[in-house]
Length: 272
Image (tube, rainbow, N blue to C red; front, top):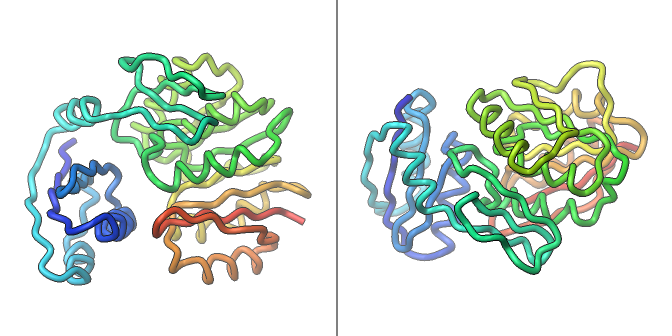
């Protein structure tokens, strides 16, 4: 499968954050920030030209180059450019070829590939931050849109009794299984699913995807919850906060708080 690579010339950090946020909504799933260049990647089959050009028009005189790259070349480039991620002293995420991280409470080892959720992205970073504030011991957890499996692995490390990691993308599932094995997490189930599993209930639901998928699945999220289930939602922009808060209230969830990092936000909710 081929991927498209776009190299954008950006002016400053603010423009970079806005660009990445909007590209993510267009289906782009991998980014490298090498100022003054931002590299963005999307599967060729997922690229929608009309939506892309509409987004580009929001920026004045945005200069970029477009390339077609083979999957294996993309992975090599991603691996070579992958740097460890530190979420304060709580979690460190590194590749197998990095030395062990010191002075972090939990270390997660992954094989860096294109899957969303390596920890570099603001939404994954915030999910980890919020997970620190929640008691996972003995809890059942659903990681909806698991990406690389980082959040599922962290939930297991935090003491969850059972973790179910699901994603619609076959490649993400393969990468997640590989990462689970590398971290010795034995209590994580993995399945390739596009929707929440029917008939199962969870104490904690993690959903780091995008606005449309979350809105489409809010009813299922509520059905998969029990009283006092915590729901962590991310993958959307600050401008979407009002709509999402209204939607989760209508669906039967109780809004608790909003966390933001740049233009991205995370919403914490609870089933009454």
